[in-house]
Length: 183
Image (cartoon, rainbow, N blue to C red; front, side, top):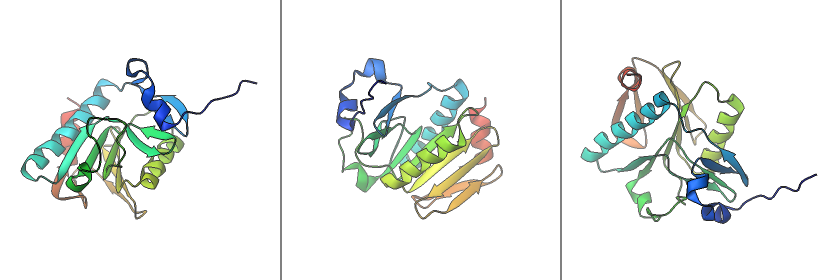
């Protein structure tokens, strides 16, 4: 029986990025991630664009797509979209990965092939790491489920405008977002 060697976050950081760019570290194990479909990536980019437009007039923080974030002593995840409030941005080196401070919002665009147990495990990992809100974007149903660190869950549907405690004044019209992402 082969012996499995678990990696630390520090060992994961040292792996060559050209061969391991599409990997996450989950409880010490390397897990290959998909590169995302055209629609998946378009949704991610549209969401980052919505954050950027709002934040250009409301300098509350910064949002990025797909950056390595340390979520535990042996875990590094890559949320599709991450947002950090301004006061948190000063707490980490923005030129180094993985980011060592959990984002305030971590958003995941959920594909039809993802298992519910895997998605739930990832949500719990984000919340345990200190993420305040986890947004699960379901393209097929046109919904965004928001899980908060307070254990509350809110489902936003077409015709509604998602709002967040992390972004006072931010409003995301779902119907418009899903329409733009599907073009």
